[in-house]
Image 1 (cartoon, rainbow over the protein chains, first blue to last red):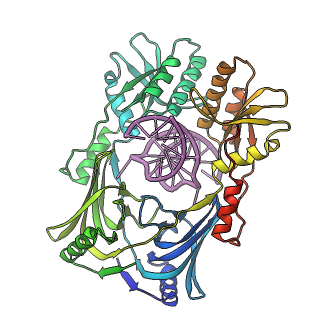
Image 2 (image 1 turned 180 degrees about the horizontal axis):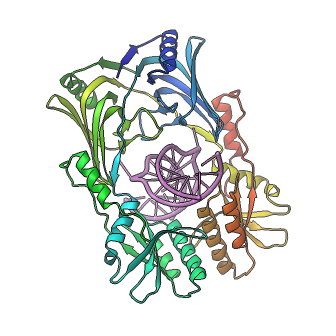
Image 3 (image 1 turned 90 degrees about the vertical axis):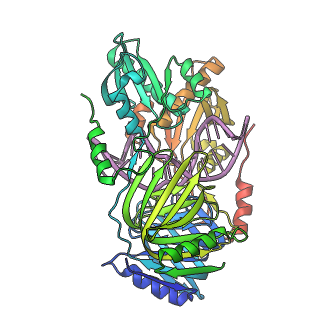
Length: 267
Length: 267
DNA sequence: CCTTGAATATCGGTG
DNA sequence: CACCGATGTTCAAGG
């Protein structure tokens, strides 16, 4: 990780510095520019951002993000695969970035610069994460009784006309059951989804009696009402954390265990 | 904008530096840490990220974001309102951040540091943006004929049982029309939405004949098929760019014009 | 406060 | 490449 920085650079110095490190293709650099700037974006939408002090990152994959002093989200950005140029005009550094598909471009004009930096970051790690929707689905496959005594899961990711059913099975009376799983709060839109799936299955199996269950850690009253109106059901299932609370296991141990617990589609 | 940096700091120096500037509440600082780190997150989900070189930002509102050398999205983060502490253990800098609602915490351990920096960014500007769904809705209100000859819009944001209808009106034959607007590609989920709305309105007005139109810049075949199956319609409406292509107008002129063009709900 | 839905959503998986 | 759905979605607006 080679790193260089210039504090309080002139526009010309910053321009030369950024250009040099941006073009070093052998060892891709991440660039940082901290200063007082104005941003003009045009593409899927159009936006203008007046003068203010921000941090601009130009990543090794062409991504550009402009961060204000608050908020998780960048105020402006360009997607991965964008190309960026630097130049000086009227003693102001201008950073231009463009992208082809979808067509969009962004211009950042700096009237003051506090810091420019570059670093050839090396990072082969990828995030290992647990507690996603797929994990909840796995859990239900392993232990269908958590939803209902005698429930038998027969298919995962079952395709129907209007989409993909998370889980499909039969209850103790052999009535088909469609299960839609959400890892966080159930939404009205999930009700629409479930209702469509149930109606698709009714046509598929030519059976009038098909149950639909929405599984989520929380189901708001509004959503419960809507479900009731459509003759659908719900289960509020507690999210289980797969990893231990504290970092007791090593990553490799965790990965091994996770692999073993990952359940493939059930035939 | 006061800025300080240390290049290649020791863990102890970085710790002292970050602590000092984090606590300067009078003039809130944004902090940057560039180095080789490991991230452990626990909250709405659980994740581990193995060693790698990343940039960590601690923003003035408590937001923490961890950026890998690629991708627009941070690999890990803490929401605004989080609290952060710094400490040294085994000659490694440890950054801990926690948040109450929802409960979540993150620990970043640095085994190598390339740069720490701090800056009291001042930015009062907020983004001015055009081309959102609301703009498309406005456009249709102003010019309903773009969808269909003789169409009359009567309500915007009309509430029905299962949600909110973007636009509601009557066609040339006085048949009620429900219009769902999407600023980008139409999805299956939008079809579900529209279908629910149409069925709600049928009940409301006790009329069997209610039309539903999905308006989007593009409607994939799958979605068209689904719409046809349900007797619904679609229009592919080109997105119009509100701002001129180049930055010819000043911000204030643009704002004035935008305000004039913004149309309130139609009674 | 909670709830709802948009977003320049982004991103990964699948066909 | 298009398309589809999840996201620790985030965020702002409205009740």
